[in-house]
Image (cartoon, rainbow, N blue to C red; front, side):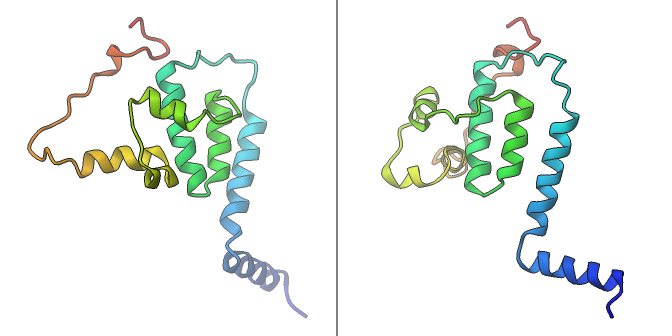
Length: 139
């Protein structure tokens, strides 16, 4: 008869080989976070910039099948449960897409644009956080 330790090892190996052990761990983390999240403490208002950034990250996470991570992001950030329309995001970022770019998250296209930019010697000037409306700033 198998010992408890042997059964645990066999179960772990089976779950790992099926690729579900990581998913189960992520789901448990998400549920623990949800249980511990203090709903009485109000979150700062979600700025327009954070709304867009969170949506880009959520689209990336869901594309890569990081669903539990995406659910924690949504819960913790106060992002709307329903994803923002992709065309709305593209318009806000002043991005025009070709048909092939629509098959991957916008974040991939943005990173690809900067990594593969023909302007190799030039740098892009980024504004600091004080220049945008972030929660807790007076900008």
